Length: 215
Image (cartoon, rainbow, N blue to C red; front, side):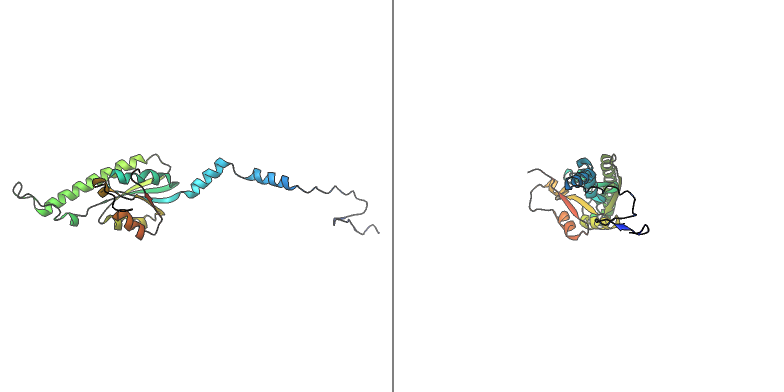
């Protein structure tokens, strides 16, 4: 063979004649590959932390009606809110139209206490109490790694929950199966109360229903 010609080794490497051929790199065994693969995997703690972050939600809505039952949903909602996410606390109060005629004024005691005046007084009292309640609920989650906001709405509870869920772009709604009505009359007549049932049927976002009592 001439000097300008290439000599091809049996295993396919091309070298110039007279040059030293380096040793072929040994193939890694399957056990070596497996060890390297295992070494590149995250630690169990890191894996659990990543999975926990992936399981959380960026925007969580938790409706509260002032009852101890409804508040059982709050710790679950806080745990499921992503770091840097937003937890929205919602309280739905009566609208003034609902209160007109709900209580009859005692005109014998105060002739000026008409139905409209009484309704306005009750309306103002309810809104003040609801605002105070939301502020207290907000303090219980203030140390979390997320933002929280309080929303005070009025009207039908289920309709307002669905509306606020759309407006806040909630990707999870957390509420208890029963709320204030059950706390006043704790006779279990169904799996869900009226509000929880309506939210389950009407919500676009996933809904987590929390059991408000023990077995």
